[in-house]
Amino acid sequence: MSLRPLSADEALTRLAEFGAVLDVRSPGEFALDRVPGALNWPVLDDAERAHVGTIYKQIGAFEARKIGAALVARNIARHIERDAQNWPKDFAPLVYCWRGGNRSGAMAHVLAQIGFRVHLVQGGYKALRAAVVRQLDALAGQFQFEVICGPTGSGKSRLLQTLQRHGAQVLDLEALAAHRGSVLGALPGENQPSQKQFETRIWSALRGCAPERPVFVECESKKIGKLQIPAALLDRMHASPCLRLEVDLPIRVQILLEDYAALTRDPQELLKRLDTLTELRGKQTIARWRELVAAGDFPTLVQELLAQHYDPSYSGSMARNYQGFARSSAWPVAGSAQQAFDAVARQLAPQAA
Image (cartoon, rainbow, N blue to C red; front, top):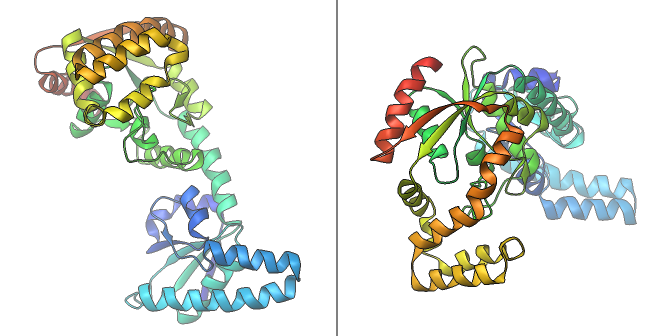
């Protein structure tokens, strides 16, 4: 039998070595956070876990263990029959559960008895989570960030994507958070991850970057939608050099109309989001914007949102929070926005290589 225990730090360092990473917690636990690339092989699903917990509280541990053991045995058998039949003898899975106890131990034991080279995370997900938090704080201090600044609609996210295509290292926090960062920025049909999963995604993205090269990141406030940027990372961003996009208003309007096309196709959802600004902008202003939506005059709506909501606080907020903003270099974006972003990326990407 080949069964090797690993610390959480060693497991995270060696993730690429394993044939599969098996998270044997329930689907509900898995949905909240998991190791990048992990497969969910629950030995108890959410209902079964709740049922065993109820038996434990109402009757006792012995009865709960009997019922749980039967469920676990059936579920492990199903996973092996469905997913492990083509594994070679030298296949090396990594297995973890909540605390590295009964659930992962049962799965690891059976797989090891078959002859696979099983690795079991000591302390389970709780230890992995603690290691990710610890490592993320350390990673934030290892990189030189280049912060892309610019008012709403200047195409910061587009430049990030273009830089990535040109080979630069990029940390796209809004993509990782599944949110564009503004009050209107929730992505239609997509829920944000949990705070823990957001941090795991950031950790995973930074692990893939080389510390000797700069990492481009968009300026952000403390929160992206409902999610908080880790303090160590935000502090590092605030202290980093900035580059500033300068974009004429018509181009900004066009960029926003393209980026928020899903909202202009769904006026009711747009109205719902505009209503959240009532306390800030007043009923009269919101009524005016609702009239523009009803008339389908989205270019005017965007111009007024920029002038009355987004732009007034931009420069002051940047100057307060980003030390490099006052000394930031200006990068004009004119004509065809995408061609301009390509031109900027060609100049910046060689500096990152």
